[in-house]
Amino acid sequence: MGTTLFTSCSFSWRYHQQIIPSRHMLTQCSLENGISTAKVIPDSGESKVVDGGIEKWSGLMKRRSVLVSGVSLISSTCLGSPREGLAVVKQGLLAGRIPGLSEPDEQGWRTYRRPDEKSGGHGVGWSPIIPYVFSVPQDWEEVPVSIADLGGTEIDLRFGSSKEGKLFVIVAPVLRFSDGLGDNAKIELIGPPDKVINAFGPEVIGENVEGKVISMNVAEHSGRTYYQYELEPPHALITATAAGNRLYLFNVTASGLQWKRHYNDLKRISDSFRVV
Image 1: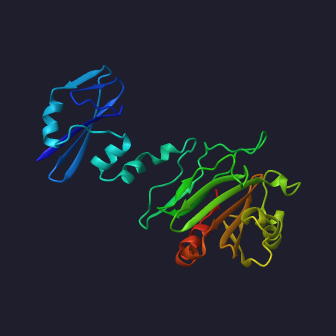
Image 2 (image 1 turned 120 degrees about the vertical axis):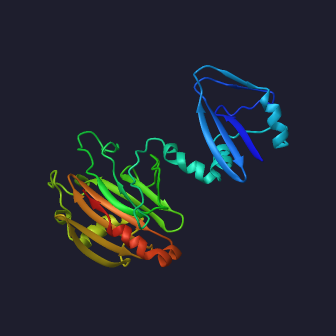
Image 3 (image 1 turned 90 degrees about the horizontal axis):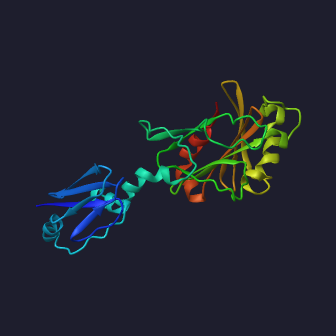
């Protein structure tokens, strides 16, 4: 036996009569042999009245009323679970964000590229931020950065995974650290690896880094130099570079258990960071 359910985006249902306001959609969900299907029917722009048939359907549903709860009704009844339905609109719920994630590759990893349209110039007179890219497993999601963030306004981006860890990107004007670097700064001109981590490490982990740095490496990609550090405790992988008139600090961190279980993924995320 098939069961058909009509809902309105205004989230109101009348047992004998349903009024659908203009500029709303009528969603039809059908359950046939345990398989649910959904059809969205846009209205004609004028109010319509659906009557009579509601009473016939009520006998099939063996209920006297149906309460509609917006997205949760469509996602749970038509899509199968509230989580799946909410995932469709999740990106739009984070106001002010501009999506920058690619689709997952064959290994389930996605690449984030800072959108050119994203704001964050750090003051009048500063040039646009040169985009950066990195890769994350597909369960990592962007986390909104609040203006009240304890990390300050120079935190440009946050990402996180409840299973593996979290990351954030600091983009800071180089003039805050050194004069005379111009608009084409290089990390080598700011200082050697040990000087850079001692100067900026506390800003990243919130405490002095003395005795916590267990490795330092220098890598070069497309002519740009990157300093790479591993710290513990806390467990952190930091990549530092400079481009334009800004210093970039990319920090990947995790709890002790996450570090033990997912170190290879965390290292891959850290090593993927590039300024383009």
